[in-house]
Image 1 (cartoon, rainbow, N blue to C red):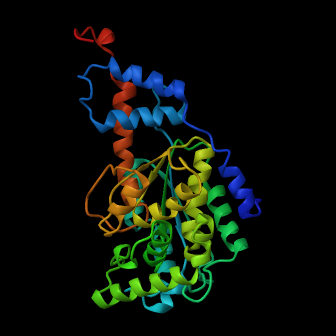
Image 2 (cartoon, helix red, strand yellow; image 1 turned 30 degrees about the vertical axis):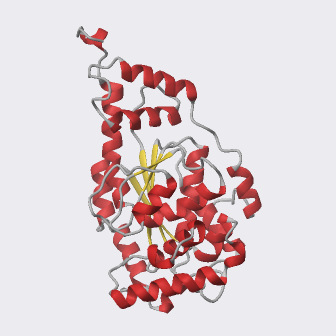
Image 3 (cartoon, helix red, strand yellow; image 1 turned 60 degrees about the vertical axis):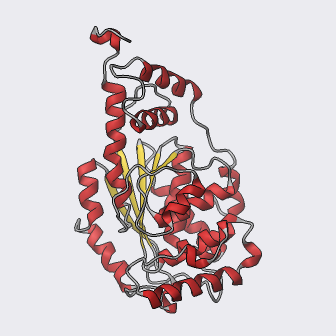
Length: 339
């Protein structure tokens, strides 16, 4: 097991406070390059913005993506005992095996995108505590999960996506959003694995009770993650933070990934500047969450699978943006008038 990088939430927050920023010169150089490529200004729309954003984080005016990494984290949730999912907790371990055997959607999408996929199961035999009764995790449990995510990132990767598997984790994500942004629980819960109307009402009640129980910690986003989150959500937070330290751009996945990332954004202003939203999920609250995060999704395809699938699909869009930006000729190089 890798040596922990930090041994407490205080140490983790100290690291977050020292996060690097985008390279202003590389951003300026990439912007200048975009202005002389053989196309009318703005003709490639958001592809141009994505390329310049990526260049700034990589510190290169004309970069390419050659080593994307995909991480899927799995965890089980004690709150499942409250009847919030259409599937039993055993499905988490079964799906992990499916990932490992290459049979899931994320496996196929990573193959198409050329992304290296690894799967990390976090103590599946020991679910988090039911957050309507007590905090989901102790601080040592949270710190361990954060370290797992941190250490899973390959420093040689040049793009990262994080996905998850965990029966009950849409309830956890909705609770985090309710705690961070306020509003009624009903506005944050969705059907997740496909619960019926009664199940949806039960999820809202569970989220309301959980947030009310932990009301004294709502001003601290990392405590929100500890009390209402899950190991796989915490691991995604650790991985996204490590990517920032390594200047690796990140594509966020759907509602659960974005809820995990929201704890970082709430803890430290600009903590998600190295991230783009890969897609907007069909999970009903994801649109609102992306608005809170200030992220415009790249894709909108009605997906709600999780696993990192929407982010994996968006890898090829980001690759295409960089291929055009770095591979196109300038007007002078092409001998085309108008540059």
